[in-house]
Length: 453
Image 1: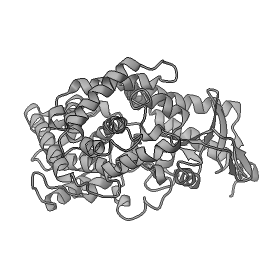
Image 2: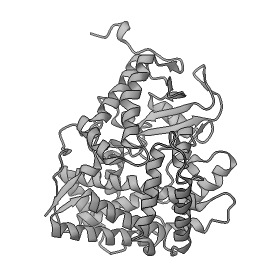
Image 3: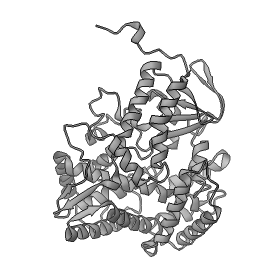
Image 4: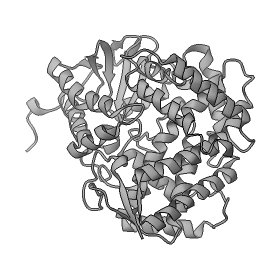
């Protein structure tokens, strides 16, 4: 029997307003877990608690309930003194991402408050005429439009070398946990971004880590200007000394362009690679617990050649990484800010309104979608994912992450190097994603452990 009209979702003619109780629930079940876990630098203890309580599942349910009550149109809220437009429909996500940087700027008030702590002139938080040269530097240095960067042979060689050292260590100790992986991952990132001389510069990433911790509370805490100045000076020195086969050299070659500020762009790259490392570890967990996908990955690796510095596109492994980011978004809250009044279905959204898309809700899809809680890398190869405006693991539109392909090169090459060794990884952590069951909505990478055989 069809539902009565009283239970049908309202059809929105434009932005509606959430009630006080709905705003309170959204704050408690969506915003507070996001902020507590650390938006800019994840907090391991809070992540462990969030996994135990599966807080993202509650957040997804809270947003789904708002859509059932109010319909597909965006919903206006007043949160912490700010006007926020919550998106509830995939078509609206596409509209906002395609409308970057005007009328939907990436430089939202929240992002500027956080990221200014360590990259004051990053393109993501730049407004006005200075945005264009900074964005252009990112796209040209990272070669956004190329599946394989021209530095791919050097990057592949470095990644494989460090990954195999980690695999050898696991073979000796019989285990692999986050701390060992993270140390190895950061050595790789420092080498590919800043050169071999920066491999063991733990102080540099330690300074960045402290600034990112401050950025978690940047709305409440003052800027750590002295630490930021030391970090940026340290980073500039490393970037100026980087060899030709590094991403930093590609950025510094454009240093003469007015306003580009390559050092701030490099700082953002280092920040972004941290999230990429979490994705690698989660993807390895999925491939060890999903035998068919694991076999397909090994078959692709075996058929792609084994040269030590051979760059390989590895489409299936890239698809695995993309689906891992879909399942556990590294940027759970996609933010934009209106640069002017925007007409939305006959109503006006004022300038300086924060626009929010809660990625876990969109990425898990409609509750009846067959891929919602399953590991489905194949859909990134057969066109299903690309045709779905709700799936934006690297954002989308003119503000899409310019480093998507360089990140996929790093992550897929790392996984290939780990899996082509004659080693078997078995997931030994408390939460174990398994095929045939809904995957956890919250999956803490810091708690992932493997036994190595």
